[in-house]
Length: 134
Ligand code: FES
Image 1 (cartoon, rainbow, N blue to C red):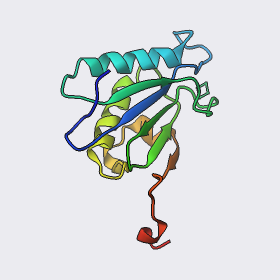
Image 2: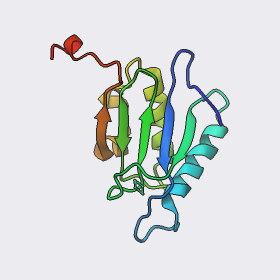
Image 3: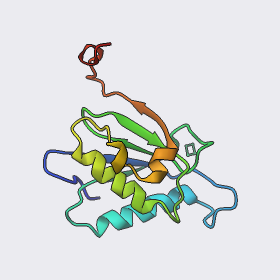
């Protein structure tokens, strides 16, 4: 699958393919979101984001769920996404994420679904609290 969005940046999009949504058009909405994002990114030759399926992100009550991760960056977990309407949002957020140095996407660049659906953010392993005065 394709890789990075911009030179010197990186982003991996993890998508839970096991999420189910009552009343969804697809009986595998997580898989449908993964397929939609993968297909859209494959059509963008300059977009090198890596899309990986995962079995569960442990936020099963907020389907469909994704996580954006990158080396040395904060990891974001986002839920309440629909394969029918949010594939472009996932890609837009990944583009913004990939362009950041630390993974923190400026609020104005976050798609509405990501503003509402964010579940958690986790600092990178090398996070140094003292640099934030903590
Ligand atoms: S089944 Fe998707 S987060 Fe658990």
